Image 1: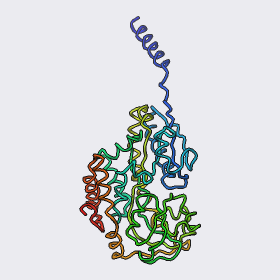
Image 2: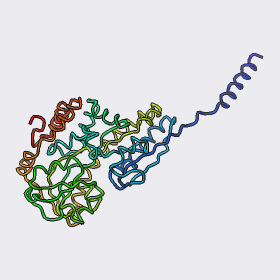
Image 3: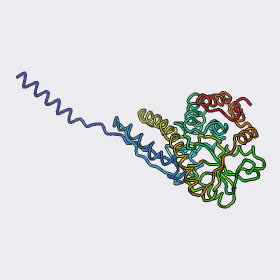
Image 4: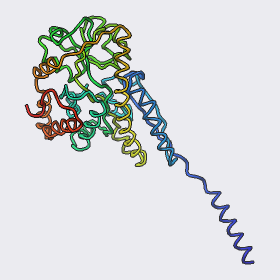
Length: 357
């Protein structure tokens, strides 16, 4: 009787357990936006690396799955509109091109305000991202735009000068119109009578083709992707250096609604995406230069003396940035010094001492 009762109870227990439904996996919608087309390096790698990596990590526990809705190439916002789009909730996650927003995101200009330091995208990405985590200024700037900062992206090994007519020295740039996208237009203040023309990457081909600009400041991978050699077959290797220009952010209201597990995965993958993107940028740089030459382009190196003279002729935009941040109550001077120290510790010496002049 005892054994029969025990077996019966065990059977009843098992029946009860099997009748309990397994917890359903929760699906979370995520609208991703960028105004650039999907052929742009950082957009393509968001699709090919970021999203699958988030999915893979969430699948390890099986608690959540993401329902991704990707919107690129102006379907929701233009390239300059991602910051506002995420702020307003038009997208949950965005890849913000920060160089378009120097007034709202001044501390994102650290690398751009310190040219001629490092052409290593990996080192610059890590240094800027570490500054963002060590100093509150960067994250505060995004918080003011109703966004949560995830990680900085560097998609270029170095800005170079691509021109429609032959250039061999910095003197050949005098009097020319040069297209740029933000803080890098300040570099032209070191060249006599050179005029900056504001534009975005997707505009440069037409600007050069129509003569609106004589040269454009961009990087070899982008020059190859957007076929710049067709309209600007002369590259002056200025090696301004790598600059952070992309930041992955999340709408703050959307972020607050996410489970902690999903937040942790997004934060971790954003850092991996940062390093992955910078590594690809470095790998593609040499290939892109070779492709540029194969397509009929000519590359000329600026001499070390020319670079030093150019840097010395520029205003100290790093100190201007530090002052702007200081006046806003942020430790701008310390941030600039800390950023340059990180790069110097990594083996990169500036052509000009931006921190002390």
